[in-house]
Image (cartoon, rainbow, N blue to C red; front, side):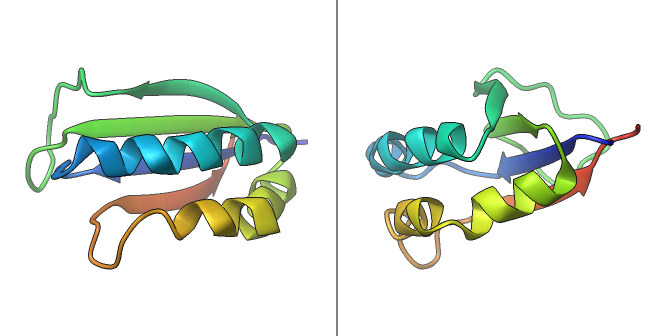
Length: 98
């Protein structure tokens, strides 16, 4: 079975404290959903992108379905509330190669 991944790219981080509040809720929700954070940070080299990138987060799940279920979970939906309207990020759920 192919793994599932969350990929989040933040083109800008206007208020790091907001991300701290989100991380406090999102981290436990991700782990409860079976996710493992593989990368999270600001040390990014951008190639062939439509702009700069200030933060990238990569989370691995045992399956694509598990990744979708974790996103849809009540715990993660509560974490999303910590990100105010207009906070910019590009979030994708993708299936890995089996």
